[in-house]
Length: 91
Image 1: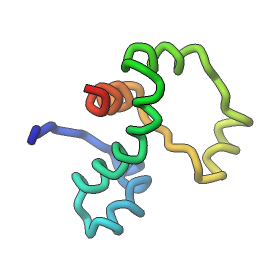
Image 2: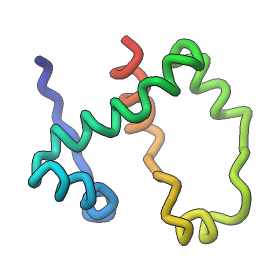
Image 3: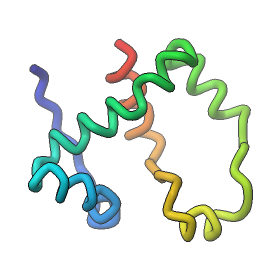
Image 4: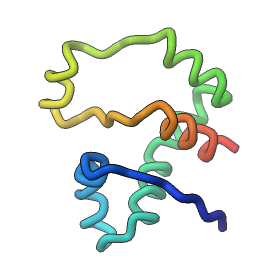
């Protein structure tokens, strides 16, 4: 088991709210579920460096930021958190 400090602002916690409710407020369980959901996709795309490079090159978002947010499907995460998540899942 590894302990890490993670700092999330209120907007990120609100986005996690459905998973927090599902796991009765357990943030660790919510984060583990997010990692489990994203792991198969990450593993099929290579190393963290390859994934980061592909993400830089590809911009496949249909529509504006407002349209994406209103669809409630995408998850927006800051770059540092995404790098941590990719490295943690793949190593």
